Image 1: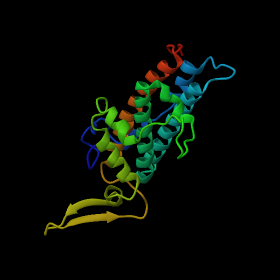
Image 2 (image 1 turned 60 degrees about the vertical axis):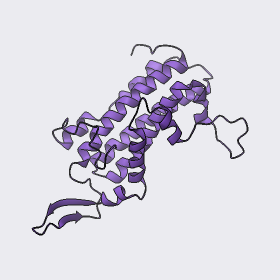
Image 3 (image 1 turned 180 degrees about the horizontal axis):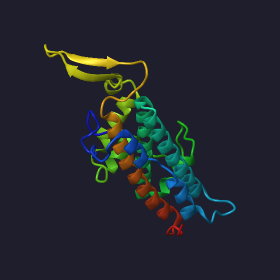
Length: 218
């Protein structure tokens, strides 16, 4: 997200309804179709970089599936934490595409002792380094975190503002059953579409660098 309602940098008019949005952002076999393009010739003992790429692809698939499922369940508290994780993965892959030697950092358990461990910078540092590619990234991440944790955006997402009374007082609705505020589901769907497309593009670029070859034809 890049604004309080998430609509500032996404096309909120591209879907006619939530049903239309769910159809448009369904993951289908997108990620499964990518697998044979990059991993059709798996060596008997694949190296850590290839294993990391395979893990990334599976994670992308799982996150997309989870976000899509929770969109269908009208559950913003399921969507936003998963969206944050998806965004974190995109940022990390984009950063590593500029520093390919760090690919092994995804497979290392880092201790507080440091030593010769190779590790990724903090999310904030990576966002700063890739700001030319995602200029609104830091603000987007701040709001994703606010929604995923106990911030004000998460709190007020439990309420839907319906109208103002004659005296100007806002009328709000609440339910113990999670649900998106009016218009928020379509915004989330637009964000998922944008995020999945950009993350797939980053993955392809990183895979080409790490594997040292173009993908095979599917």
